Image (cartoon, rainbow, N blue to C red; front, top):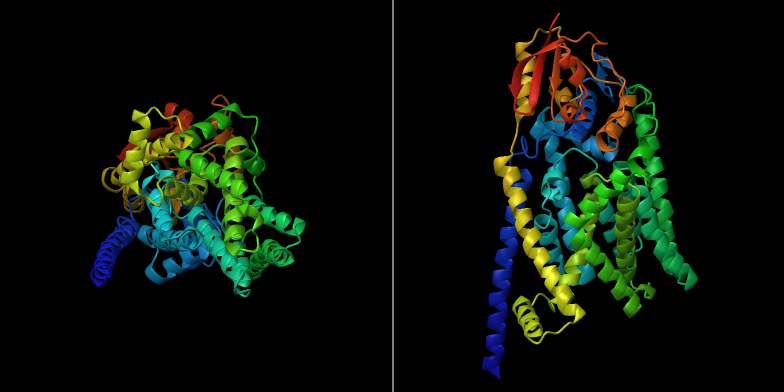
Length: 522
């Protein structure tokens, strides 16, 4: 008996050491990828440009907003305080530059991955937590859905994800330590400020357990969830008012862009948008769909959703409501851009990992494959075997494609041409030159006066690009009498300057990567 017990202990220690080595290797790999090639992976994006411009002007000029022809302009099309404050702090600490801009978001990404692991471990166990991390990192064969890539971009996706996860973790802890409810409220308030899109899905995720708790007269649970629901909204309002107070005298009033919210969030009858959303969901969101369906089926079958006295079940139900409502909006109401699927697949990785764990009986892969083979030879038609086979095929196909996407992004498609373009404009053009461009990613490093189209053009331009290629966009690129024109990865597919170039008013001067620099023909 002693020998047997000793052999078991030795086997457990050996297994633990291998697990520790594997976890350490994965942690180091993620850490390295999070900070590697911040200057060119992925290429700087148009959406980032407005945030970088506002943060740079805030640090350098004390003006919280953009510049237009060298004069202060409003802060438009940019994120909220939780996004801009770390960005401005990095500029203040390390100087204005591209890697300095990406650094805070790389840290946000590591924090979000850590919170995902921590929350999954508390809800489902260590094995599922590790699987969720691997799924979210490798089973995302598209750049705009991989947290290591979109996470380092200066946009609201990863900060809002970080704060949402922090809020759900604090809600779980609040069932034993009520003071954690304050942390949940603060985290969700910051999430709402990071990305306005979060509000309806966070509200849905909390209303569901709140309604069930009230119906079952679980008043302690109802108070906890209800307080977090209204408290997070109140916290976001309070923080927004505080920010407005601190910025008095440093801002230009913002005019809301007509039709912006409806165009991005409420286009249920646009066939192109519905088709795009369906294709992206089928291509990259199928694991999430399977995971959500399985989680909902299991909750109903086991009646676990009624056990709201347990913080785990309440948090699971809230996360299920968040992810399912977000996916429903994306499929049936949104403009269908793949980027809007990011949080869905991020949170959905937890449910798909739980599905795989149950199907493989704790990731006993060899035993699972043997049972599948046995079922196939016996021509068994069990639903479980089919689901196992589909899930494992998804893991293999999407895992391989996701790994290839990371390789392409970091090695093949790394691109710092935005830095070379800005350097050319700053050093090879006259000091008083005016640059016309809609490539906002150039602005925070550009030392020349620049002009861009008015904000009202955004919706018509995107409508033409996304929904109706025949739509007319009314804009005169010569209104500011520019000396140079820069056409890059945003303006080119939107055909913003095609007519003026075709008319011969500008001549191509230099091409740098995806940027074309034109000189005015006077």
